[in-house]
Length: 311
Image 1 (cartoon, rainbow, N blue to C red):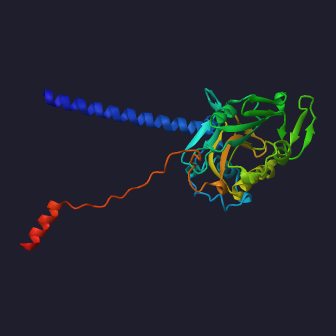
Image 2 (cartoon, one colour):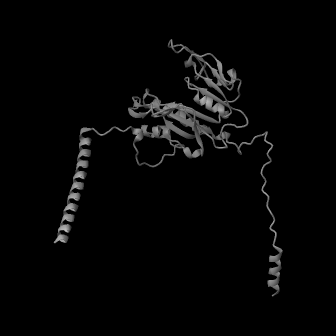
Image 3 (cartoon, helix red, strand yellow):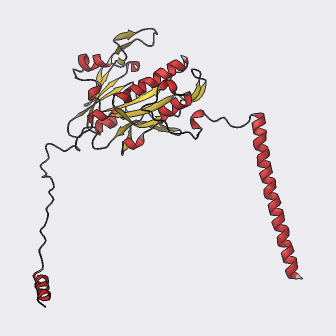
């Protein structure tokens, strides 16, 4: 009698458990359906939505053929496998992330010079010296520029030189606003006239830019911004990093789209890859030689083999 009672109780427990699970499933489906009807489902930015579509070959695809979401996908494309060792240099840590950092590719064939002093041009630092000081500690000489800081030309440190100038497409004076009485210089003017350096993009080994997507001008202006990025890569710049700015999430009225409007994108120049890793020209170390030892037969083994042959 006790055994039958136990079996009956187990059946009742199993039935109640199954009924409870079915009730929970029905409740979940009800809530999902209700959220679809009332529109209370959380709004997810388009950059966070994942769709199953075939990969796009960015090298051959025309910008005119890309949708808004595909253009955002192109900007967010990290191509991280092109650099095996990437370091973020500088920046300030916040609860939502790091701001002001720049990615540097440290692979031996493209990393900043170790033994011949590298040159760094840092534009728009906005009182944030963390990148400039960190890259200086890596052995580089830094030329920093920002007219918005209202500071005179000076040496921030022995190898960091500040100029009260901004980077523009031509030499001009910005005085449209009382708070923006800035002197702007083209990159060519800064290279040749100010710093007496020769060469332009052909000597830029790495490039890191905070790309801001246009918020006005419609789809045409949006595509023009993407074309500028694409032209760099068609020239020979290889992307190795892209990070969105977590503080730039907003609605973009230019293309009626919600997502991140600022990205830190980094490239290296494929035309300036070293043939071999850097070596110190002043080093007295002799390169390691591989010594191949001749195989010496054990005389006892030789004699034994001869003995076997005779027998």
